[in-house]
Image 1: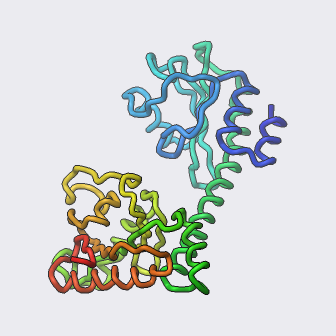
Image 2: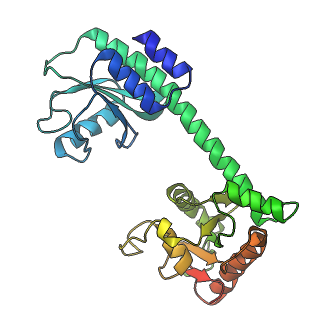
Image 3: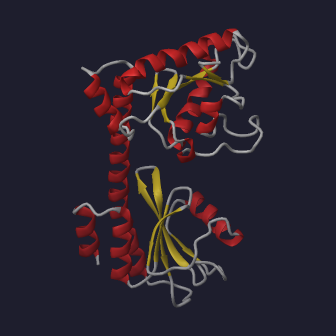
Length: 306
């Protein structure tokens, strides 16, 4: 079993494939969970996974608190109806996920060999998840470099600008906006006058960058976003009161400027019809922020044409 799982991990298997190999080798259902307990991959036909179920949620909280392998008792009517062996997948102090091996017999105790094998497998899963995370981070870093070069005008000619746009997922001839989200200036009513007041907003911008599905990059204090025209492909604006949830929770807010964003001011350019116009769009978005804050619209979405 160790040889088969190790071979799959070392030849570059993705997490889902590694989960399948592990499940087939030990002949038991296997679940791979994210650090927040959402399902990453599964194999062996386990039952429906719902981490919000009362019994499961309580056990998962215990697993997160203990940060060590646990034998989880049966939770009737759930994917863990026969119990399971749960092992954190860690690199140093960082938890990358959790590996759950489901019991199909209902036995109260699991052989110690199962614990040793699962802990060894968790090490191989850590290798795979760390590699996938590094690959994703490198991809996002490359994407950020492309965005920065495009909006800064660092391209030789029109053809190179179009090539950069295609690398960001824009099709030829696809119109787009340039949007800039910026911490509200310290002298505005929505923040403290302290120069350090905006530091707390930076994690908000990072959260926005991680949650949206269009090209974006954090540059200095600004989150710069390329927003394609097809709004139906973007996340829908949430219905919560803007003051009770994460500001700028959906890109629809960026392009309409109809919802307030506590601590964050957003400028949106006019609709641009060619990638080589991206530097012009960046200037428009920045000018919208600068003029909007003078007109007491700090903390809002501001369209350049308005």
